[in-house]
Image 1: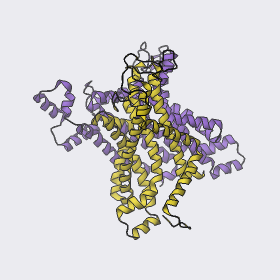
Image 2: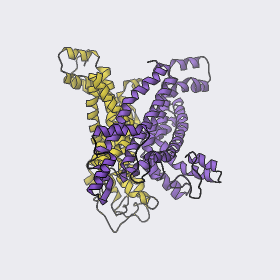
Image 3: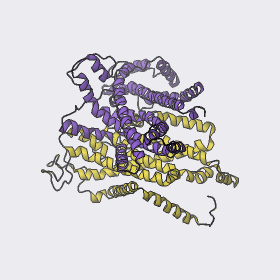
Amino acid sequence: MTDAPARLSDAAIRRQMLAEFWFYFRQNRGAVIGLWVFLVLVFVAVFAQVIAPHDPTQQYRDALLVPPVWQGEGQARFLLGTDAVGRDMLSRLIYGAQYSLFIGIVVVAIALIGGIFVGLLAGFYGGWVDTVIMRVMDVILAFPSLLLALVLVAVLGPGLTNAMIAIAIVYQPHFARLTRAAVMGEKEREYVTAAKVAGAGKLRLMFKTILPNCLAPLIVQATLSFSSAVLDSAALGFLGMGAQPPASEWGTMLAEAREFILRAWWVVTLPGLAILISVLAINLMGDGLRDALDPKLKRS
Amino acid sequence: MIRFILGKLLYLVPTFIGITIIAFGFVRILPGDPVLLMAGERGITPERHAELSALLGFDRPIWVQYFDFLGRLFQGDLGNSLVTKKPVMTEFLTLFPATVELGLVAILLATLIGVPVGVLAAIKRGSVFDQVSMTAALVGFSMPIFWWGLLLIIFFSGMLGWTPVSGRIGLLYYFPDVTGFMLIDSLLSGQKGAFASALWHLILPSIVLATIPLAVIARQTRSAMLEVMGEDYVRTARAKGMSQTRVVGVHALRNAMIPVITTIGLQIGVLMAGAILTETIFSWPGIGKWMIDSISRRDYPVVQSGLLLIAGLVMLVNLLVDLTYGLINPRIRHK
């Protein structure tokens, strides 16, 4: 950090940065709505056991394909109706939020950590290290992401864990590229040279000096990847390659509901709506983050 | 320009080698014995196992196998499907036009709607139209298209009975495969109603496939236009007293189109991923459905070659986009 005219403590600077960030984030109404929806989603996921009226796997054999409560044959105990084997839709949707958030967090964490590490190496060392790493990333990017994830899952075996690993591998090059570009921009700056002269080791230079200044684009990309991860894992679930039944993952629920599309609209409509709303909320947030973190767009 | 093209081509060689290694390695890193996997649940005698291993070359060193694979690849030999026993290349070429037809119509739809919407939204920045269209674009961008497809089927096929649920053309029509493109072939056949049937079958899948590219193109066009509208040359054009249409249509749009064209080109990967889902939902006999079916049938030669062909295709289109970019924008060419 360069010296500020009036010396502020680190904590004060951080507070000021946060306040500035919040000021710009708040300007974007969509982003604030997205944030609220996302917080509700987190709340629902965390307190699923308390909120859900039924066990998501409990099958009520006397109540198969019961429509939502506002339709003629609806029952008050199943607010959003039941599916083909008599499981409560509302409870399954609530528990589904856990899957989506968990998938998003795990995928982004793996992709982010892997991408940052690889990107730092490539950007910091340059030369053949850079060439080799970036060519490997190019190869991964040459495949359509869903296709590569599908094939990876086919290799690893269908299931939630493998689906998450596959999606993370596919997303990782985006983070590597961003990190590399940011590192290359930063590493010739004076503060880095100053740290080098002061005797900072390579690891310290990479992780403590340069990395914190490259975070803004990574945060924006992480949000975007979070929503893509929710979408792609749902797509894998829909294709039978993600979470396996009876898991109440939204994509898997859709796959199970497919044969009833013309008979029971609610089993198809509701899980998809849940996916759409969560992805939309995260994308709205991502737009706001970009506005708040990207100084170039801020002024325009 | 020639140096530019050669440079781009040379740059692709390592990527292409990487793709072949992944496609080749895919069958080898599978847990278990590929021959046993191919034999399926019926099991296999040790003699037959040895015979098959020798036939498929699994008994030789891995690098020999790889170069053998490369050698056959350059002769256009991609092996045979384990299920249909037909050459993979033949199957690919039969199914490919269906995907291309769907993809072309989708990207056309996305461009023809997305670009005007983006331009209008930029000109009328902050207006109701801008807000509504950009909200719609964000919804489209966030859309789980497999669900979107099901919704459209429920509404247009189930409730209204307007559109067919699956396939490329009605069962009543039969005509020879000339180009592989159903719209063209049905016209060539001269059968009454064939073209309309093909068109009706194409509508829903192409809308579904176009959704995400449409949203991306509209957003990208808007931001490119906004950026360009603030440039000095646009102000100069206005100062010279040119009409709004001319300023927007000629001076701004032309320059804004450069990043938009790149965006459109880069949608090929999105389209291929979307094709997997769209073709599955609408039983569209193309490459996406072929890949999904082969993965679930464990038809490894098909998966391996399909992966290679699709990645090669994406690479080729990206190269073309790069080259067009260089053609339009001399600054890139001479960098």
